[in-house]
Length: 103
Length: 354
Image (cartoon, rainbow over all chains, first blue to last red):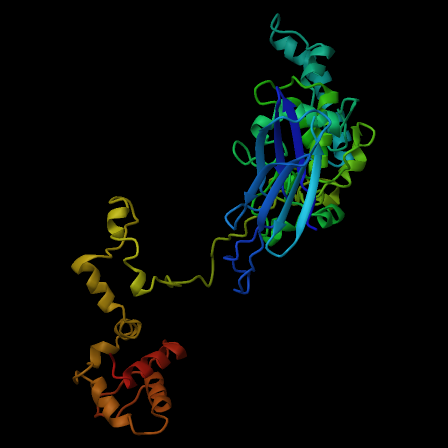
């Protein structure tokens, strides 16, 4: 299930700005631990943000994205009180969905 | 970040009061007509520090939600919406675990797992954060935040750090409870020479001025010569080009020549056994391929190579000296050589003295 994301969404002049701090290890699979064994890759592969039923952002992540990535984007539309839903899937089949109310 | 024990604070405050009472008159006697006593309100305006026991903490309160608004407005441009930004300053939040909140010591600091230190991985007293925000933030307009604003922003930061829930209201009443949840609250020690005062067990906060370093000047049984602990392997000597050109050409330290004809010479001489033999005077009497006073090493090898325990015999001879095997000229004992040095030399000789 992963740890919860922190999401903020704010509407200003008809444009909603969404900021999200995603909690994920994002292991590249290149790193070695203290014993020299490779730390297995573990990263987010897909991320989708929805406003209502409408997909406002779809992204393919890879191993080059940092640990606990920060994501910010804007979309036209959205109104105060409506919800923005962000969800991700990782290469281990784990996924997580969190939502925020537009302020 | 000063964590004084209460007794020390009480004492120092009392001492300060005494001094100011007695020196006030003194100062004016010497500088007649210069200056005046600071008024209590002037002192109050200066005296804004908040101590770990929350002395000096203004009353007030603020919740996470209000803190979020304020943070977005005044802080996020530098620190990022979640205090995560590493662009202008190091991140404020992140890097701690639930376990750290239990133990009061951030594990990532010592285990090396932490990729980046943050404010909350390091700070031991919440009063310090309150004080700092109040006196120094925002960067462009310090002291513009009201106490309630500071409580709210701090509540938001604590929520980001997952120390308090999202509906939390921080106030001067419950800040002491929050202090008990700070992830690195046990991470600070004052048992160091830089801290003033007596050792902690005698009621002070320092260690009585004992330095942290343990360097002592050698007065007896000192090492007489420099021992080289490690050197670059030959294949790596040129990894950075000509070292001599990369160092200053004045002063005591020079770069060694790593390229060109000069560099080839020391490399050829880099034979520790030969150096050992030369240094200890073996080469004065023994040649590698010829007799000088004693037998050449080639002759020694020829005589001993088929004997069992040649190494043991030669080791004994080098150590105790000998006479008669190669003629009447004696070989002096070499008791000053260490056993492993003799072993190195004998093995080197038996291997052909190359």
